[in-house]
Every structure is written in structure tokens, then in C-alpha cells.
View 1 (tube, rainbow, N blue to C red):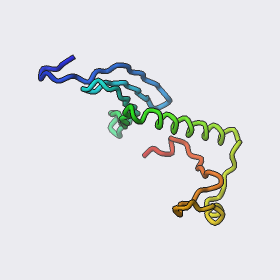
View 2: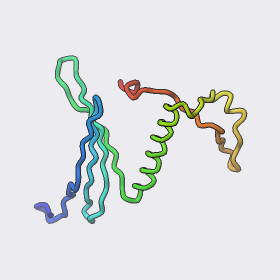
View 3: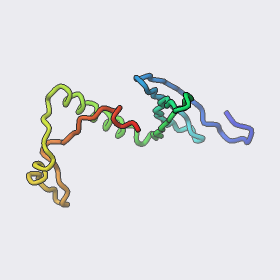
Length: 127
């Protein structure tokens, strides 16, 4: 497909909307001018103003094919960790106590024996 300038148009290949509470997530597969595929992930949330009107606040991530596997691995690992914590399989460690006991890597960076997480609700992140 070409536009009126003769350039290849970025085609929408696939779109999936996921409604999750107050938010909607859009997963859109698109093609570049060079026919490579990429993914956009958009979070959309309806915001109500004092005057009764509303607007949509959107945040978008562009994910390119060379990052698909690493992104997927990181996302799944983070979700699995949340599930472990929620099931009570992990104990929380006070970061102040952990600081003194953590072993050092050769380059001087600290690694904690147990990862530290804060229990938050995503609603806490709102303005």
C-alpha cells in the first residue's frame, strides 16, 4: 500500500483491546516502510475533569522485533515474581539490613540475597 506521496504506508496488521478495570490496553502490530513488524502497547485511561468533561490519558510503548524476546522474558519473569509474592512464597527483607550483608560482584555492584519488593496497588500510582 502506498500513500499519495508514493511512500509505503505503515499498515495495521493486528489489533487487540484489553479492558482492565479503569484502563484499556491496546496491542497493535504494525509494519514499517521496510515491511518489518513492530508492536505498540498503549495504555488508555479516561480522566474526568472538574467541569464534567473527560479526556483520555494515553501512554505508548514501541517494541521492535529485536527486543521481543527480551521484553517477553522480562515481563513474564516480573509477573511470575508477583505471583510468587502474592502466594507467600517469598519473604520481604528490610533493605537496610540487606545492605550490610549483600555480597559484592567483581565490579563493585551489590547483589541482594533476596530481591526486595514493595507492595503497591497500581491505583496508588495515579495523580
